[in-house]
Amino acid sequence: MKSIKCKAIVTLAALSLFIAVPAALAGNGNGPGNGSGPIHNITDGTPVDITGTVASAGTRGKGIEIDTGSGTTTVYGVGPVGFWGTEGIGIPVVGDEITVTGYEVTFPDESTKIISESINNGEQEITLRDPESGAPLWRGGVPSHEFGRFSTGGFGKGGGLKEGGRLP
Figure 1 (cartoon, helix red, strand yellow):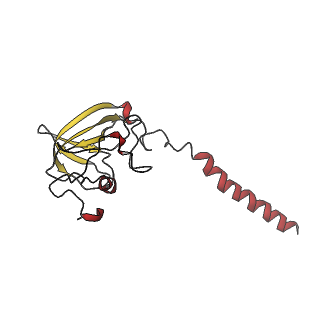
Figure 2 (figure 1 turned 90 degrees about the vertical axis):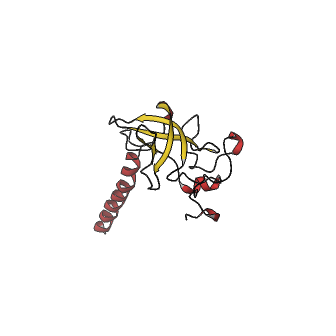
Figure 3 (figure 1 turned 120 degrees about the vertical axis):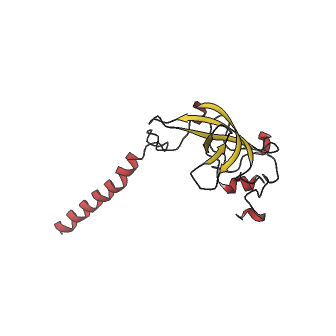
């Protein structure tokens, strides 16, 4: 009988540690603060506008490369294809002329990236991040059209989406 009680106590203690330790180490959900977590403060970066021709696009997480005429700049944070589709705009493809408004963000390891806030092709503009907080609009639902910065139609040159929001 004593052995069963001892096993039960040890098992409960192990389960408690198994649950409590990860919860205690999880933090507040904003990443560890060393640059490896999500970016919540991009608006603290330096505002930039990049204009040029899309030279490379389509690899998730690798950003899009824009040929500015004086070099190539990689822009990150363009959002998922599905978000663009809900706005009725095709994601930029190679050859599209675009202007990206965003922020150059410096990370704790001193590396920098340009994170997009909005992209314009001369006819249409899509807002990708909340202008106040920099939070991605594709997270937490599609934003209200009251921002007044969304339009409909394709980006041109194939656009990136077929009818029904499917990739070509």
